[in-house]
Length: 121
Length: 395
Image (tube, rainbow over all chains, first blue to last red; front, side, top):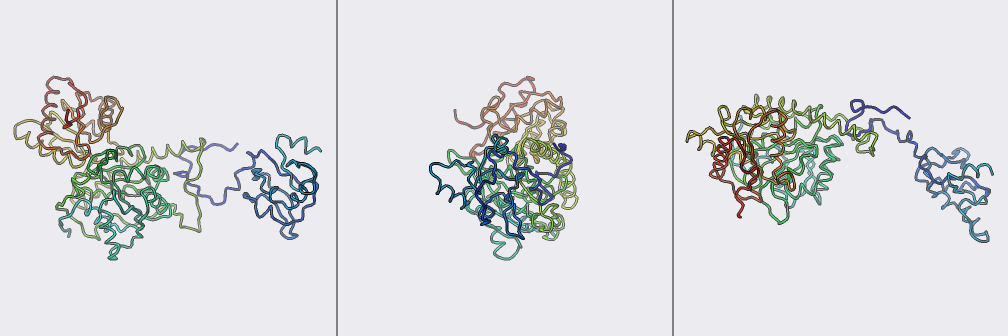
């Protein structure tokens, strides 16, 4: 934890004088669900990148590839999984219900609490 | 050379605004607005000022626009009254907390309900804990003088707080009086140019105003506001002294009228102080040693100075043009402040509160003379018959 400053040491009125410091704020620590890549192959359509409200889809711009998730800032909202067309295909082809952490999906949303065991699958 | 004109209190303030030539004025243009803003809008239309004049759809928006413009780095002024101030409520606190040195002309009028447009101090007394500096004015001249000083007080780097300059609704705001207007250049020279330390419009050095501020730092920012209020005490003295020297005035934190050998004192603010001076003169002519303390600075409250000025009198009567409902004995807010100031500074004297003039009811010299007579009785008996009286209410 960073050292807490006294009232004489901080800008008045709650002003933030250093631009661009929101990156330092670890918004990922209140996540309840974690996006995890599943078995279905990603087509690099970039819809998840386009829709992510926290800019937490990591891409290799040169090779136009989606490479993973910025888990420091991802809040686990699941929009990436919801807009993923590969996920839609998996769900359409499946018989019966597909849970959102189903291993067959392209982007799975796994409960943080369960992640340890799922991670060991 | 200054010149004298017959002006209403509102027009006196409009002229101060014209001379200050603020960057932005945002105001609601319909009632309960006063003609301060209407007159100023004519100055804008006539090209006498460079001000960006923003008419908005509510007072909540007016104060919001003021906060935005102030954060952007502009010198900002506005005006309102009564329920208009009440509608600004949320942003009143935000203006002070974001440390925006906005200057507001506030014509004191009663709050609804029942609907009433006339003078009392319920509007300003509600904002007493909001973090604004509050100056009171006996007449249009004082409102004009205070508005000019308010710019310097609020924008002082040690302060950076908004300032409200009050005068009494209709009694002075809409009444013609002889007002001395200084030369435009003299006023501009006195207020100088606004040099914001952290303007949002400085895009080369971006910054954030008003972010989320939880239990880890909010408290520290409130402590900073306390410091600014503490500093304001000294800054108000400095600016007032400079104003007095330049323009030949004798302002202080309050005015002590015939207090030197006074046996009893009345404390009043705004136009009633003028009426009370007549009462004091009448009593003095009868050989009674009456004195008056006219409050000019209500926030930060000059408690210690006030107590020192009252040390030695044998009784005190406070005139309150508002009720703090449910407070001890349902007294007025000024009474509570004065009692605290006296008690904490070891001035122990019989003191009573006189609530008066609500909703614009007239207060006459004779009624104030009666207050003095009761104060002389308190002094003689050394005790208070009734702590709070509602002067002039029909039983």
